[in-house]
Every structure is written in structure tokens, then in C-alpha cells.
Length: 362
Image 1 (cartoon, rainbow, N blue to C red):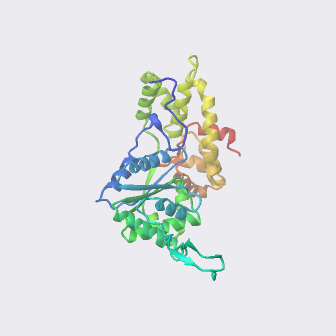
Image 2: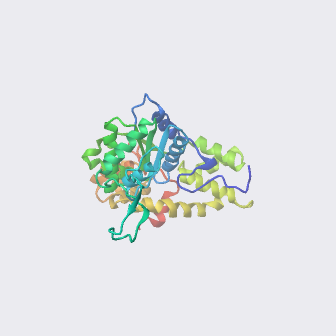
Image 3: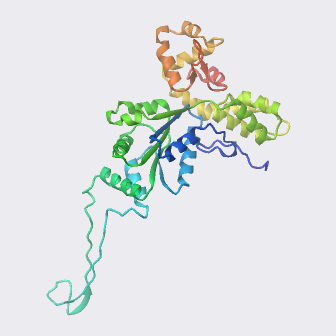
């Protein structure tokens, strides 16, 4: 391995050589490709920095290379419907709805035509343009997808980090309608659970609410240790030490791997911790913390005041213990807290206790 090239990355959606496969992207690709599968929509959820965009990107890139697919990643902001129509209109087999026909002829013009003086030969050209406002965007999009399907193409629409906007509701509604018509249009989105659940209040998006959802949890600790050993050229014991600091959090795995790769020969793992914490706090934890409500923040603070996250100990620290179940469920739904152990809560982020200690009152 070339020691000059860092195999780790902090760029969203890119994992590079350090990619650890959790099987989610492969499952989606297999179902989308299969004619026997009835799964047309997938939602990838998880904590910020958990690797949602990486799995999404793998699906997008893989199917883009497949000759039987037309793949259109769209921005979560802006007019997604118009953008999708524009992208489809660029395909060679799609005829633009604006049709211009030039008709040329040679004729003799006398002086009785005001714009022509004398007698000479001229060319007459006329353009016939179909009324652009005759068809709605939904009708246009449906026709385009129908043509694509007739040409034996499946169409995949992708939206990374989705959030509810009027334009996005309109796009999802159209996709649901086309799927009901039997058209082969597929959808993959990523997003925080609360952002995806915002769409649940829309009555015409039942298909989206009921679609398959895959949550990205922590990386496998054995995979992390193996990749550290392989990519950093260290022994298994040192790899295990680094893995224990990463907390199985995807972004932390990449950050710590990159710092270790670039460290000086006389630096140790402990020497990297200040930079490690600074990057995590600035790039990830501050955004996560600011997204929590006051009640959710109180539960997190109280959790860290306990020794082992027992529910009873957390409630004893709270101003209103009766509100604990509500905020507990919200924190679990936001993927910040692990509630798998009965009667206990555990924060999924490494060094988050240090963040709360310093910045928890903000």
C-alpha cells in the first residue's frame, strides 16, 4: 500500500478502500434487479454519520452501470419534478414535447408584400410548436417513464438526506401513482427518521410510509479491527485498541483511521484523541445535539449522571420523571440511544459523554 495515500475519508457518501459492507446496499440492489421482487421503495435511516449516504451511493453507482437501468439522483431541495423531467428529456429515445417543424419553399413575391420590394425568390419558414402548457408535469413524467419501460429500462430515482418540502411531497405522490399504474419506477432515499416520518401526515403517501426501511446501526467491531490492521499495517492488538475508541460509529471509524494513518512516528493513539474529539464534536455531535428538544437533552444529561444508564436512576435525576417514556422513545427513534437492554439506555456515540461535559449546557 502506498503510505502517501490515506485510505480513509470524511467525505459524505464515499468510503473508499475503508468501506465495511453491512449488506444493506446489496439487499436493495438484489431486490430491485429481481423480477420476482415486489419491493420498489427503500428508505435508509440512521444516526447522522452512520454511513447512510455510503450505502445509498453504492446502490446508485451499481445500477448506473447496469444497461437495463436509468438512474437519476435528485437533490433534496429545489423542484425535483422538473429536474427529473429535464433529466429524462436528455435520453435519446425521449422525444421533447416541443416539436418544431421548418417548412421551406421557393415562391415569387410581388411588390404587394409590404416587407419585400421588387420581385425576387425568397424562402418561407414556419415553426409549429406544441403548446407547452397543454400537458401537466405529471402527465409528461408518466409518459416519459412509460416510454422508458417500453424500451426495457427500469427507472430509479434517488434522494439523499430527504426532508419534507411541497416539491418533494409532489414528487413522491407522482411516483406512488405511477407505481399503482404498474410502471417500473423505483425509489431509494436516505434520511434521519424524524425527517422521513414527517411525510406520514400526507394521506396520499401511504406507499412511502409502508415501504421497507433499513436502519444502519454500528459497524461490526471485528470488521473494524480487521480493516485497521490491514490498512494501517499494524498488529491485531493495536488494531483492537483503536477499534475500542471508535465505538463502532462509522464516521468515528473513518476519522480515527485517517488520524492514525497520518500520525508521526513518535505519536501514540492517546496523542490523537484531542483532534479526534474536536472533529467529531464540530462535524457531527454539535448538529446532533442541536437537533434535540429540551426534554431529550435532559434525558441525555441525566443518563450520563448515572453509572450504567438504568431507567430508574435516569428518572430520579429528571424534573418530570413521568415524561421519561416519551423522550426515551424519541431518542431511540432518532438512533442516538440504544434501548435493547431492558431497563437501560446507552448512547451509541463514542466520546459523547465528553461532549456533554463541555457543551451539554448549550
